[in-house]
Structures are given as C-alpha cells and as structure tokens.
Length: 261
Image (cartoon, rainbow, N blue to C red):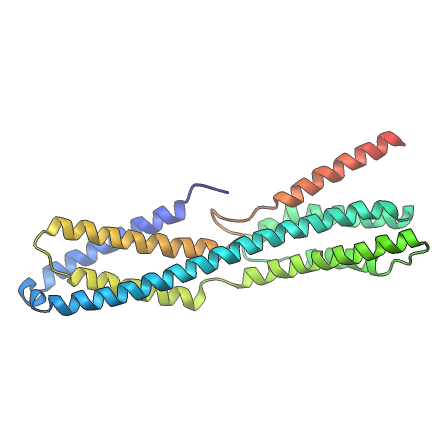
C-alpha cells in the first residue's frame, strides 16, 4: 500500500491557510472584550459541536475503512476465481479447454491494460462485461459427458459465480463515495473553525497554533475519508495485483505445456 499521501498534505496546507486567514479576519473585525463576555457560551457550543463532529468523523472513517478492506478482498477473490477457472479448464476436452483458457487470458489482459486505468476515471468499460459474460456463457453451455467432467462443471459454476460477484462489487464501489456525507462533514468543520476563531485567549500565538492544529486534524480526517471512499483512485487505490499474478501463472503454464508437446 502506498505510504505517501500528497492529498492529505495538500488538504492540510489549504486548511491551515484558510484557518490563518479566517483567524486574522475575525481578530481584525471583532471586539475581543465583547467576545470575552460570551466566552462561556462559545466554549460550551464548541465542546458540543466538536464532540459530535469527532464522533461522526470517527464512525465514517471506520465504516469507510471496513468497506475499503472488503472491496480489496473482493478484488482478490475475483482474481482467484479467474485462475481457478483457468486451472479447472485443464480437465475439459481440448476444444472447450482452449476456448475457456483463452477467454480467461483475454479477460485478465483487458482488466490490467484497459479497465483498471479506466477505473481511475470512474469508468467501468462495457467490453469487460462482455468478456466476463463470454466466460460465464462458455461454462454454462458445457455438456459434461463423464462424472469427472460433471464434477469439474460444478466447480466451474461456483467459480464463475464468484467472478461475476466480484465484478458487480467493483461496479457498485465506483458509484459510492462521500457525496452528501462529505458536504455535511465540510459544513460541520467550517462551523468548528469559526467557533475556534471566536474563542478568546490572552496569547495570540497559542490561539493561532491551536487553530492550525484543529484545521489540520479536520483536513486529515476528511482527506482520509475521501481516499477510502475512492478505492480505485489516488494514493490508496487498489491495484490489479492478483490479476497480474494470474497472467504470470498463465504464461508459466503455457510454457510448460509447450515444452511438454
């Protein structure tokens, strides 16, 4: 997993700049004496709002992290299903075996070379669905002639079900995101910053530093939530590692079969 997070650093920098500008404007346009009179109310509201937002952010980040790990697991399951189909095809008659293994290879190559880059732009290519349907159709239309072929057919049916499920889950994950939740968190964060600006202290330096810390923490959490809800983009994007491994295995098996012949 990528350990560099430029998105988080950029958001933190922007949030810090906004916080400093906002604090400067408040200090120049408000009367500290007047604010000090209402210090107790501001303190109470800041505590309540800060607690609510921190709890909400924690729940959202935890949920997004769980969903991210689930999608990553489903991608791995999809790649395993594809390799299982390829291996199981070895027990079929030569014609069906060649066709099914070629279909698996075509699908694997398409995912790595075309569909994964397209998913970074939030697109799932219809050609990939056609290739997946081609594999499913080849398995469904098999006509086992022996008990051994029947057993292989049953295993192939289970594998193509997992393959189709994995593709569907990828499609659903690309339609999810922060959306209205992100807008809510953003508005709540702005409210917290404004309340932080209004909080009066005797030391300007400590007030500025603490305001920067609040802005950075909020930006980091919002940025992390964005990255986790975009599993095929940016720094935390899920890579087609399993499918790359599948292609290497397919190449190795083809070499071994060529040498055997």
